[in-house]
Every structure is written in C-alpha cells, then in structure tokens.
Length: 342
Image (cartoon, rainbow, N blue to C red):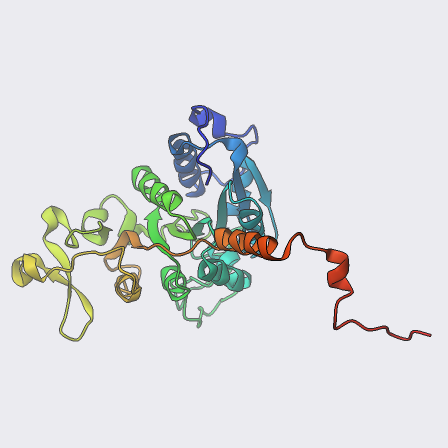
C-alpha cells in the first residue's frame, strides 16, 4: 500500500461507465456499493488500485470499478494477484471471488496465497451455489442440497470458508453479509488496513438459484437473535439486550449460554490478535447449520511478514552481495548439456 498523499475522491470517481449486469435483486449489488462507498475513505487513488477476479457472477466486479483490473480465469485470481502484489508492492490489490471459483478449482491457489501472506484483500462471495452456470451445487452447498447437478441431494460435506482460511494460517479472517452495508464497510476497512493476506467471507444471496439461503440468520427479523457480533477485547454477547453469550466449557468446547444462567464472568472475551488460530477456528465452527447463531466480524488479525516485502528484501540483498544478475551466465552455468550435438 502506498503512503503517497493522493487527491480526495468521491464514490463517483470509483464507479466505471460499464452497465452493471447482475440479476435484479442479486446480493452482489450490495457488496459493490459498499466497496465503492468505502474506497474514497481509504486515502488511495483509483490508478493505484487493482481488482482481480476469477470466473463467476461476482467476478464481473472489476468491470464496475474505475480502477485497473483483470477478469482472469477460473480459480486463478489469487495466483495472478500474487504476481501483481509482489511486482508492485505500492499498489492496492483486491481479489474478488466466489465459493465455487475459490474453493473448487481455485482452492490450491487460495490456500497458498493465504499461507504466504501475500498483501491482498480477498473478498469471497459465498452464495453456496454456482450461479453463473445456472444452479449446480458448490463446495459450500449444504449436505442434501438438491440442484441440477445433485437431483437426489448432495452427499458432499461442505467447506467452511473460514475454517479453510484459518487452516491455511491466514493472518486476517473475517465474515460479513450483503444486507448490512455499514457492517460490510467496517469489515472491508479493517481488511484493507491489514498488511498481508486479508480474507473476508461474505454471505451473499443468489435470488435466482439459491434464494434465502441465509434468511434464518441475516434477515431483519432474525439478526438480533442469530448474529453474533465479534468485537476484539469484548465479551461475546448477542441477542435482544445481550441475553445470550458464548462461553468455553471445561472440555474446551464453545457453547451458547444464557448470560443470566452462566454469569457475565463466564463469557469468552474475543481476542482477534491471538497468535494461536485455535480459538478463531472454534468460533468459525460455532454455527453448525443454517439455522443456528453465527459469528460475524473479525475472527483473526495478527501480524506476520508480508510476502512481497520479503521477496523484495531477498532480491535487494542478493544484488548487494553478488551484483547485478546476468541471465546469460545463469543459462550457461553448471548443469547444462548438449542434446544430440555433433
């Protein structure tokens, strides 16, 4: 990220002249407007910002941002974005992907970008379905999901995107949803401020092929009792008047309790900066289905070396010790031979 002072911008400066082509009512609109609203507040310039996507409905995103960008190939956005971030550490690089794009064909690229801690802000739109290709089940579809490709119900156990990210040792992991612009902006701002790989899962509704997938958690009538808002340094409470909370039992398992019964002192205090990802992982696994209370917010935010900076430091060190590189000498160094020479 550049420290250069840039001229003030407005949301209009970040909106491209391209017609937005998502289905009316798609959750992608909410995410796009949240990002476009946030960008002027970050102190960055459109010409120093890059959005890279893979394949899927959400991956049309770069067309709608007045920045540099690339609508790349299926699953490879993290790999392409890694090249940009390493070659140009002065740029803000965002990755836009979906549950099918990033967790199926792109799973390998995603986990290694997170493992390396490449300086990327990765937004994963999770609608638990393949929308662009018309409604097949995805790696996050629930067991038993009936789709065009699973007419008798899916027998696959779904990925939990946050568990995948935490298992890959991602240094920043968060979750938000498409019906709350204020919350999205808050989470995206924190993700952008983090130096290294930031991973944000967004519960996003596909009103054509998987409408209402998250209604039991994110709809207005359900939010107070079903959404657990994580705040670093604060006891984890939720529900109307905070009557529910999260506590850790003697067996190490996290449980939802009534505060009146368990007591305030029994509640778990959220620590997003804890080096060990185990507690964040346990919070990511707290919700066991689509009808149980689900945590949102920043699960993990720890500092680790930025991959691009470390690569640059190695190159600078090598140049200082060995002098400028000589590609011709490298190609003709030990370990080469002639094939079929006379």
